[in-house]
Image 1 (tube, one colour):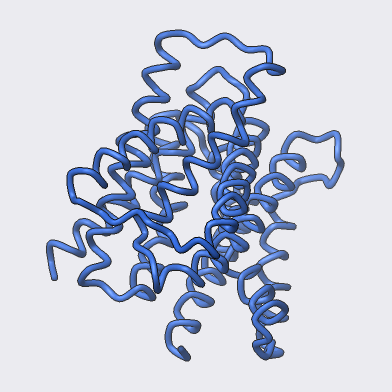
Image 2 (cartoon, helix red, strand yellow):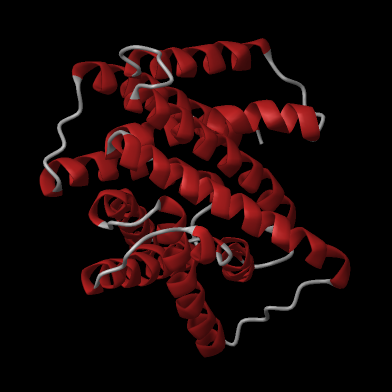
Length: 282
């Protein structure tokens, strides 16, 4: 079990690096995501061939794979928009509202009873978001970053719910490969309308983001799930913003404001509690 726990923490630690590339790569967020999913798809396909993974999806369910790819493209694009407009910390913390959205959406779409405590949790989480925003003005970049971060969390909650439906029948590797591949299809047209220049350094960063900090991180995460229960994995995954903020402080010298620390702490506490309580009662 120790090896699997190490793999899990290492994968989440590697995922924590992803936000830094929003600051390091000089390109629009959609182009960053395109490079990320392209290199990740190639890496995951090689892993699938090496492990002889069965990548077949039932015909009746193939139509949902493009939806997953679209949601992934929007999720990651919104995430990097948030970081480029504000800071790594704000992007990660506002994205961490995902578990709160998930419990609300599950009650709406899966017809699960929404308990009064969930309203309190949602209010508390968004109070944390309120603390992060110094002045709620749409022209303010911090406010814009928070809005994009919340959109990132919302789209990821949709992705989580739909993935949950198929995770029982297909491996995470299969689902990830299909999602990354369809995300490429949705993002490719943007190459024709986006004005940008990619340097060799940016290409290297995209390669590292797609392979090490997405592909390898995902492979480690999947391997650890063989021995670690999914709810425990989700609790560990909540450490991603903590790792990411520490890394942005050490490598980018970004120092979160006191309001960001206070609001972020509230969001993370709610996120941890929602994940833990969901696992406990399921």
